[in-house]
Image (cartoon, rainbow, N blue to C red; front, side, top):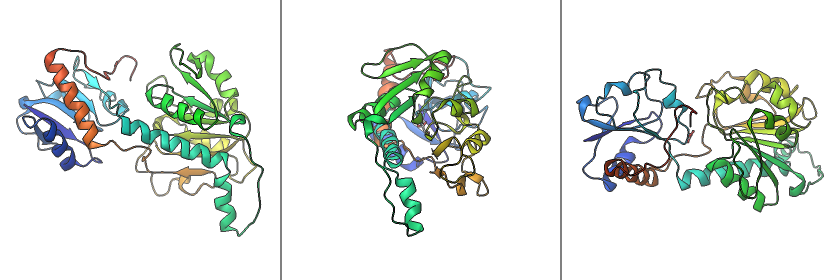
Amino acid sequence: MAILFKSAWDDAGEWTRCIQAEEPELEVRVWPEVGEAADIEFALVWEPPPGDLKRYPNLKAIFSLAAGVDHILGDPELPEGVPIVRMVDQSLTAQMSEYAIYHVLRYHRNMHLYESFQRERRWEQLPLHRAQDRRVGMLGIGVLGQDAGRKLQALGFDVLGWRRAARPIDGIETFHGPDGLTPFLNRTDILICLLPLTPATRGILNAGTFAALPEGAFVINMARGGHLVEEDLIGALGSGQPGSGHLAGATLDVFREEPLPPDHPFWRHPKITVTPHIASLTDARSGAQDIIDNIRRLRAGTPVRNLVDPEIGY
Ligand code: GLV
């Protein structure tokens, strides 16, 4: 009985230790040293090579090392009927919220402008806005969006949400479906994308979306690079100087191509803040506990938590 580990970014040694601390019987095989394919019962992956997962005839579940599962569902030869489980972890959720709060506050308190003022030795005080006058729109209000949204509410921000399906959320005004998108965007000063990447959400951060935001809005993408039409963002930011363009700024943690190529215009754009996909990093200890708990549930035939619906894509 073995679990296959495949990720170019996560520490295989640490994950192996954490998994074996929970379940010493489970052998961890680190890709590409997979050994006998028939031994592999579980896979724990980030960006598995397309076509690889169908090689294991006894595969019982595929666990994502991340909250998103687009990196698995994108495999055209994914074995049919094998459950896919996404990572839902308290520390991952808390880190995502920290990132959202940090960047909302940075824009809200004009810190992005003061950073450039300092470089120019410019002493200038800008007007302050009240948090309750700043509307923060969570594009995607599932586990992650709700946690960040509630914490932003606690700081006084006017938080609203948008999601695919009509499901009300206690205490957060929520819009849904394609018809709800424009009214939601019209009322959003700071847009935070936390959506799963699916065929329905690919390219959702586009010229039409930006135009529906109020003049001077900000965009924070902490979901997937595939949500953003990069050229449209550059267009909406104008010349890059404050005051030009429809959008006042954008913070991007995720990109169509990662690592972001050195010659990409985002790196040096005065109105774009780039971070290297660090909004959250999955914690091996709590992640391994969660995976082992789900493996026990699978064995016992009890319902598995955080199961993905491949039809909807998350
Ligand atoms: C990271 O990108 C994640 O999906 O958790």
